[in-house]
Amino acid sequence: MEIETPRGPALVEVDEVKRARLLLVMTHGSAGTVDAPDLLAVRDAALAAKVTVARVTQPFRLAGARAPGSPERQDEAWAAVLAVLRARWPRLPLVQGGRSNGARVACRTAKAVGASAVVALAFPLHPPGRPERSRADELRGAGVDVLVVNGDRDPFGVPEEGDTTRLVVLPGEGHDLKKDPARVGEIVAEWIAGYARP
Image 1 (tube, rainbow, N blue to C red):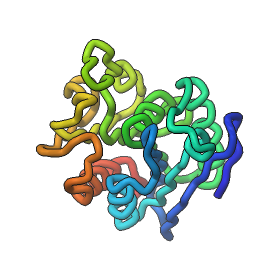
Image 2: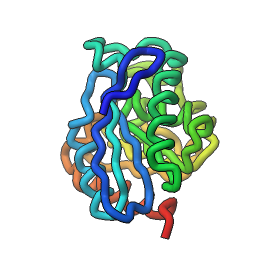
Image 3: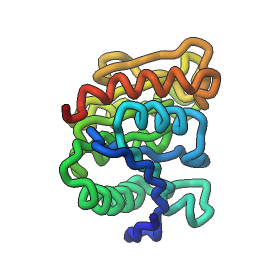
């Protein structure tokens, strides 16, 4: 489904389950797609756990841009998408998230869109080689519980345990989390179950 936002259309791919217990909305990184191995693994594990999954291609990617633009514009478009999805599934608890830049969007907008929690895959703590430019405040400022799943070889860094509700660091994984995406899916599905309705 296509959703109009103030920043252009977003494309939402929905996998709906009967008697869903939760709505999980996920998005890509700056240069990625919603078909990244970790996002597909999360979708598959969530569907098996009776979770309806929406994967959002943000307007900047649909327009062909590789850079997301300002956080304010990105967050404005995300809020518009979430308003439509919340209206479609008003009774389901919402968990939102994404990988890399998408995880940042999810953290920044969680409270405003009414999310119960955030899933942050490969959260980019800082630009590569620039640890002094930490983005940990986005994790701490989410205002909801945040699960972070990062690889220990991620050049964007790994958050501290105190910056998030739960931190899972996967040995041997880089920023793409593609060595064992099924494990990423299992971790996420297990964690989000705590926010699902019975």
